[in-house]
Length: 277
Image (tube, rainbow, N blue to C red):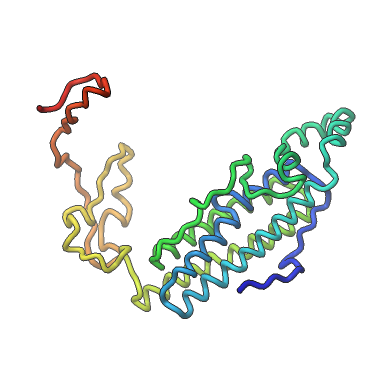
């Protein structure tokens, strides 16, 4: 069950309406790394977790918190769009060119589609996609993805924080940035705990038999860029993090034949050199 408290987890009160800023904040709500994506990722990961206990509870705790962040940003966007109906905008822009420059960047779907409310979309108006939510069924793979998700979310919130002088918006973003700090650390701690519990490990999946890998290539660094300095890193020499191999550097050579395309079907009218009959 889910329970909803009407009070926000944190305030969402901008100093003044700003339709252009509302458009930017949409990225934090409905973008690839927005709050809808992380909430659905964590909840789906939790619901599919077949190991009751601390890891499942962690996923559901943070996933539920992210629902509150969706509400915070939705409220913030609605207030940034407050008192900005299309007709009044046109009159205001006619009298104030600087205001026209700001409002001219407004997402028209905020007015046309959502009635000056938030949308499940990114800052360019692209609808949110379920493809952004990730739940693989492998805890370590998911937790590593979650670190990336929180890193991207915090990065984007920090960028928007620098794009505005609205103290109210900054206060809201400051809270969300702080929670992203906490969540990054939580997922990193969860990864360490998973590896200590030997529930899963590196490489993912750990229980795939390594003798079934093409083992000569499992720990070989291929210098494929003319930069040349990639071979100087610890990923090219020394023990691998999984403790199962030693990194080495090898110049790659082709191991397969030159491909010969199959003979095209006559009814497709394909032109070119046919393959062997």
